[in-house]
Image (cartoon, rainbow, N blue to C red; front, side):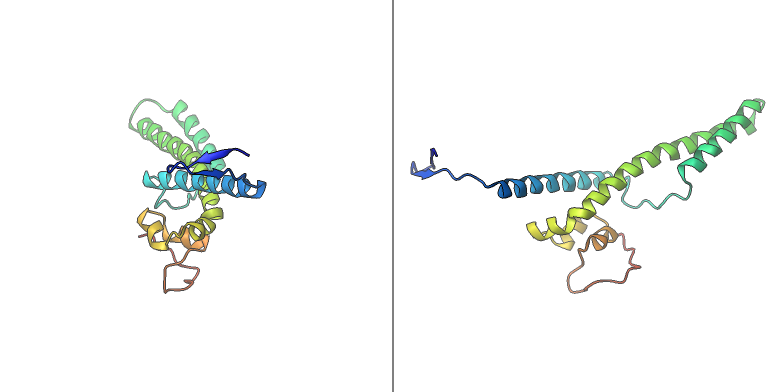
Length: 159
């Protein structure tokens, strides 16, 4: 083993990390990346208060096909203009669903590590809330407000 000199010039022996320590460190870095990505995404404000979509992608695609047929057979005018606008809105919903699905996957990863990350780093419920993490997400992750214990399952507090 080599020697390492500290700022005082004192020599000390270099300590090798065990594979278990290396694995824990890698896991910690991975958890930090998930938390970092999640916090950045919720900071955009796009996902924070979104509700579930009522239409599934297949229903939206079917409606788009129907609208396209109506647009093709409609003469120019206000009716066609409204159909074109409705198509545009459905296309935006469909594009947004893909974005929401990616965010849902990230949120699920966050839920899987948030409690351990919080306990390991000493992060409080209040700090998560200050960073914009919804209360429902924290509760689902097992992180509760202080002195309140476990709230009922129907809590849907956002702010």
